[in-house]
Length: 117
Image (cartoon, rainbow, N blue to C red):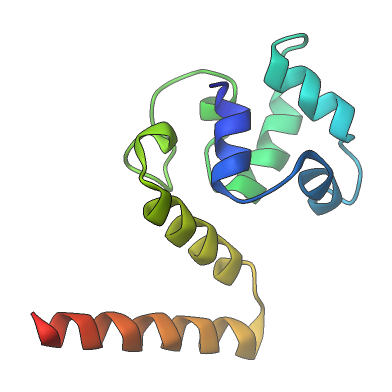
């Protein structure tokens, strides 16, 4: 699977949803062209999408293996791991009190799970 498509799907975006995150500066058709290999992504667009998807621009351009935010390949993740990644990515985009609340919920859950072990 193409890296752009894999990162988009792992982050839970549709083509339109990802385009919307760029304030529609990158159209869904352009993203689809990159994903299909019809066109190559440029550095500036890779920077924009990388920030949204939580991966490096180089990763989206096919340079290097590291996603920086995810140690393992997105393709190698289980469904549960992908869902957790999507949730953490969405929490990371929240502002102020919402971000603090999301973080507190995750910390409380992890603390309770670690205490059970």
